[in-house]
Length: 511
Image (tube, rainbow, N blue to C red; front, side, top):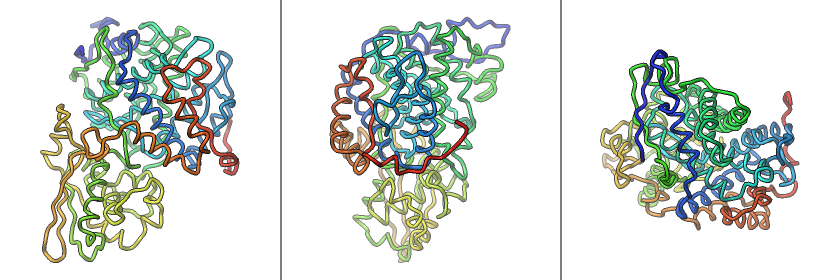
């Protein structure tokens, strides 16, 4: 990896284009380095994972709305169009709108992959825009599955490398500000664009995707699912403009009035960003991890710990037996999804699903009582409003623990952790203490996810949504991803069971 020193420059310093971070990203994207077999196999896993969570969300209101918007924008003239999750493969729309609809479907349940470091991310959000462009231009540019694999590998690499180096949330900027540039870079790799074009696309994508984190604070709305899809849509449009010769604000990161100077650490800030050097393989996807449970990633290990406590101490399900539950965890977990956020909505039984999936007091309570976690049933209003649940829920708090914060930020994979220690005080005066560092599905967990687990997750979430023949067809296409021809890239979608989507009311808007 090559380390790049990134700081703010005054306009009169005339920072050379080739010394700018956006150019370094563009050079990385334009490097025709082959993708390793190990990375290719993980990309296949994540394509399956994205389709799994999209299948489970096809009938949910935000996804229905996004899909209806996309269907109002038929394919554009320069290609064959892109598929939309749930619709027939022959129904094609303009690629930026396919990226939009499919991105919402993937993100709606907060159930796909994650990478956490200086910033948060869901790098699987790169897949919808890159696939959409690949499908649209497959015939015109002779694109194959191998080209798509290269584009996705770049998207993961750039986003994860930015996430390792630059914190956005510390300045209340939403994490999709790293996704816009990464998706633009991934599309640039897919299309074989030169560094100068990718540079302009990366700058435009960043400029149009910086927004505040209010979408993940207080009463969390459906925009949480839309934000990454918006970044993917902006990336497609940014690449389109750059290919037409249009330019971006420069230097976008380092400028006197740029992102770092005014949105992040300020004019005196400096970062060290590492990116693969020329000829160096893009392997960052292997640092990321998927979710077994539909909830914020920092809740994964704590759900598994709650399930363990349910089995070993069934008496904890009754609030009459519990005086208090304190979860000692990292700064991020405490302040983002814990009681440290100081959001009363995290204890509100009438709160939205989006809010509850960012409430570790709620999530831990339900997993402790039920001994399980379900992407639909665990969030139902009647489940959240159960009297014994509300009583126990209000006895759960979080606190920051310096050691868990250190492990959260550790660069050593063997000690990096996203869990915590739970101390439970019972009404009889006794105490139960237990801890879990990583989720069971984590690569270092009790039951790491492999291809079989990804396929099982897909089958579970597709049940009742896709016909068996469609499940088999999609899995076959996904597992053949590197060898897919231009004509076969349209196979990378899922078609809902007959009548499922037509039975849903379609919202009306402007389009």
